[in-house]
Each structure stands twice: as structure tokens, then as C-alpha cells.
Image (cartoon, rainbow, N blue to C red; front, side, top):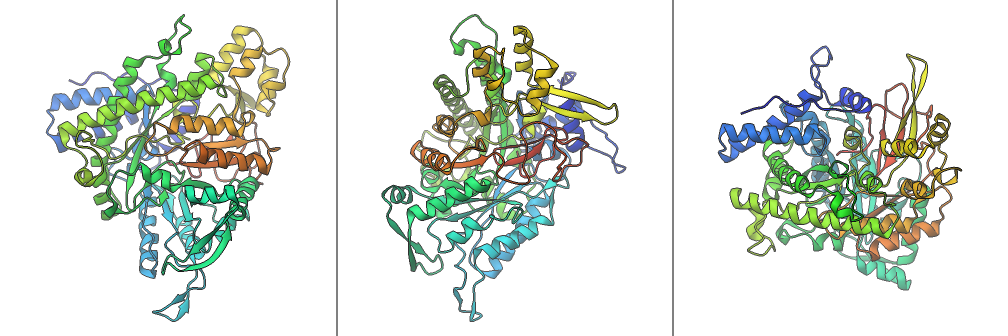
Length: 616
């Protein structure tokens, strides 16, 4: 029996974001939904799959709807934005992540462009591998002409994406990946040197351990044309690596993905091919025509007060396990509730049934525990939490597999007989750019990005200060809270340089730019051990960071077992997305006072919820 749903208690900021992008509207653009209606719409649309596809009784669906609603309305778990926007509406996709095939023919390229347009129209983000496209200037037998090369193909896909606003609500989001062994790799590395070029694509270079070892020994390696497997040149591995590093230092791109490490976790049989591309923010490696729906558990919701000095006694493990079970069930149902823009995507997605359960609010949990983000203890906590979530999610997927059957491609996979999972992959740490704003928590596994920021209230002529609630509570408790302090922090002042602040507060409330590249990478690696897909994390560096700092970060990412890396050096772009403070420059959002941040490869506004590439 359905119970009266509890009313969600959301912040003013969350309500602004939901009203701006998520609540349903009538034909006159008037709001016809509130938070309670949104969460109930999503919960009921996903729960009814149990009856439609798996024979559940009405009373079972009612109970599941209540459970889903309670989990969503408390923001203990939120699915990716397309599910929040589209579930129960018969419009758009519910998945965020797609990888589309891109083969070396005009027909295949045009099909990729067409399918990309449909996916983005429905609300998804797309990834492509350029690695199979023949090099620029290569002969084309059928026309006796010369190939335009993969960078021109990339520009064509970018122009197609520019025509699309995802689901009518946001800009197109894309990822382009190219193998470091491709003859046009230097042109690819340099293709976004001019700011604004190919603006709707992130780019990453695909490497393997062989290449990284050659970098260390300063050896040469072959560049191989993909259409005929001919070696066309030999190149210095260190020179190419240096180009990657210098460009990343200059403007944050390209990132890097370690494909051999990614494919070591690819349990699906080789008849589907290797994974050679990822979704737009890099956390979800996928086979061609696969999609994946994501969702994140808000760890800050599972903190419980206690006198013990053992952090394990300050986590509500029982409720966390319940939410993991519900979230796994929820995400598996999304696969069946989904509407697919392309039939090939539906077939492949239902064959592997990949889901991406992840986390957000990790930095908030650390502040509640009074543990500095850049400490060894924080890495232990992160690894231990993810190990537990991995084990609980695997059990949840096994239980679903026992009831519903394993994913259809399981019989052809390399999983052992007792590993009859419902989902080929189960864990992903997404950037959670907008859904973390709705939940009022830190994004993904990122550290705190700012302690305070400000918003101009045009109508009332007031400046309103938004402060991290945990920091505000501590500041008031310790007696150093003041409007002057909040104003200084909102203008970018570092807590580390301010007087009269207890040292332990400075250590616990350290922000992303104040954390070293090694510490960023070490935290990513601590989580990656237990994540079968990937992790979206940006190594945010201060403006003063050197090329050597970036070199060390990329090398450390490979050595420590990460599957990819992205860095961003503050101030390295003219169209800077700020951590805090108010700026007059507004790239795309339409609110009165943009408060812009850059995290995990995404640009977003904390005021209205606009985002440029975040698809979770």
C-alpha cells in the first residue's frame, strides 16, 4: 500500500536548480511539478518495471515505489540527470553515457554523426574513438583522393553536436579518444590549443603500459596507420608524452586513458572487441554502442554522531547497505524503462546491462569525521568505503542475477560460474556536477572546491553569502565566524593564510587547489582499486603549478593503477570557470549572477544548475 510521501527538505539553491532544469512544465512553460512530484514521478516510473518485466504483484510495486521515493527524496541516492528529467514522461533517454562506433568509411562516419545527434537530442553524452580513421593524406582507393584525417572527422562531429541542445536543456557533451600509436597523434594533441576550438569535445590520448615504459627509457615507438597496419614513422615516446603534458598544463587537455588497464576489467568476450573509448567525462569506458546509466550515493547522509575515535563506528552501515541494494535494483530497472534513440544501442546495452553506481559527498563525510582530505587516513577511509560498496553491490547484482538471470552476454564472458552477475559492470564514480548541487554535497570523490561563495540578489539589492554548512557550523562553534571572513573566502582568499583560525580547522577544510597533484592522484588510486569501471576526477592545480607538476601527476596516475587522468591548472584559460566569487563573464548560463566552477571535466553554475559537459 502506498504511504503519504514525506516532503523533501531541500536548500534554496537546490530548488532553483530543480525549477530551472528538472521540474515539468506545461505548454505555456508554467511549472506543474515540485520536488515531491519529481521524486514520486521517478520512483513510480522505475518501480513499475518490476511488474511490467518481472511479474511483481501490485503490492510489491507499491512498497518498492515507497522505498525508491524515500531514497531519492532524502538525497541518499540520486540517479544521473537524464533519469531525473525524463523518467515517467515518455520523452528522452534515461542514460547519461554512450560510446558510438566510428569506422574508417564515409558511410560509417555519417552514421556516427547521425546516431550522435539522436543520442544527444534524447539527452545523452557520447564518446568516440578516432583511432580507426586513416591518417590525413592517405590514399582512398574508391575515389583516388586523399583522406581528410581524423581531426577533420572530429570537427564534423563537433559541428553536428553544436546543433543539438541535450534534451532541450543543455549543450552537447562528447569525448574523443585517439591511440598514441596513430600517425596523426601530434595533430590530435594540439587540436584544442586555440581556446574555443572544438569546444563541445573533451579529448584524451589512449596509451598503454608499453608506451609509458618507453617514456621512462626515452625510447622510440612506431606510428601505425590503422587502415593497413603499416608503420609510417618512428617517434620519441618522451617527445609525445611531453607534448601531452605541456598542452595539459597550458589548458587542461588532453587527458589520458590507460586502455590496457581498462580492458583488464573488461569481462565481456572479445567478439565484442576491446574498449577503446569512454563517455564524455572519462569515468565510463564502454564498448561500441553500449550505454550506461549512472547514480550516486551521498555518503554525507550516512554519518552518525558518536564518541568513538574509530571512524567505522560513525557510519550507518545498515542503512548504507539498504541503499546500495535499492540503488542497484533501481539502476537495473532503468535499463528496461529506458527509451533508446538507436536500436543497436538498445541491443548492446541489454546484452551487457552495465550500471554505474558511484558516490558523492565523500569530502563532506571527511569533514564530519574531522579527517583532512590530503591525509593517509582519508585514503584508508576512501578505500575501505569503496571496498565495502563494491562487495555489497556485487552481492546485490548476484541476487538480481539469481532472480532475473545474469546479463545475456554472461555465458560468453570470462566470469566464473559462481559470478552470475546481473550487470557486466557495476561501479563508476561520476562527476555528479549537478546532482551533487541538488543533494547539497561535494561532487564525486573531489575535495571541497570552495568554503564560501556569493550571489547577488538583483531584486533586493543584497549580496547573499553561501557557505559550506559544515564549515559554517564549525566557525560558529569555534567563535571565528564573521561576515568579513565569509566575504574574504568568497573572493578567493585561502583559509590557510588567514589568522585566528584553529590549525585543525585549516587542515580539515583544505580545498582542491591547496592539495598537491600527488595527493589528488593517490586519492583517485585508493578508490580505483575497487571500481570496475572508471573514475571522473580532476587534479586541480594552482596557477603556479609547473609543467613538472603535471608530468609527475600523469606518471603517478599510471604507476598507481588509475585508469585515466585529467588535470586543470587554475587560470590556464581565458574563459575561466571560477572556484568562487562573482564574475561578470557568463559563458552560457542564463541566470542573474553566475557562480561558476570547474570539477571533473565539467563546467557548471551553482546558481542555476547550468552545465556545459556534465551528464550525470
